Length: 181
Image 1 (cartoon, rainbow, N blue to C red):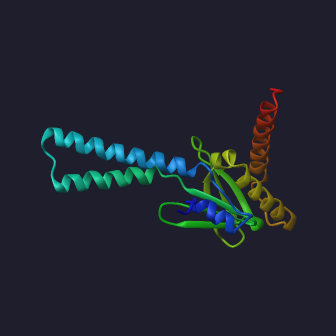
Image 2 (image 1 turned 135 degrees about the vertical axis):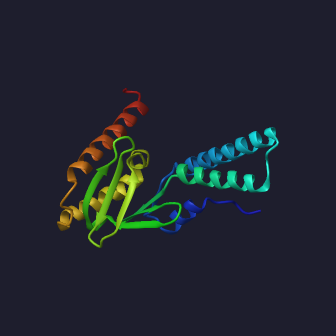
Image 3 (image 1 turned 180 degrees about the vertical axis):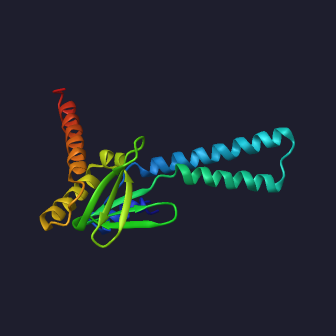
């Protein structure tokens, strides 16, 4: 009987300098749960009214897939010199060692928009970087190479703010773990 391994962990084992969003699996399960609960509730209500038919059940299932599409988070993966964001339909990848601009968009859910010198663009939730220090570390290393090469011209203040916040969170966690806070 063989051991079951997580596909993300297997991918990281093949590429030792790769980091994945460690909370993505739980968030994806939560999105599937919301979708299934939504479809189940609609079908249960339709059944109770006695109006359930095959076309209506298909309609509720399609609506459930729509709910899944809304709640399913993008999967963020980072490696040495690159960052990839995989959505429901497509995967986008940017060279972090050749970044040109970094912007912060959105007021409620702050999103980070990265554009590289090759015209590629990714958009990711800033909370992914807060919750995954390894992803942040690989992005930060790529940003430093972009700064050294002189390609990163816009958005350094956004990255500085983000670095200060993540560093203070990590310092607070270390102090709390050591009992000093």
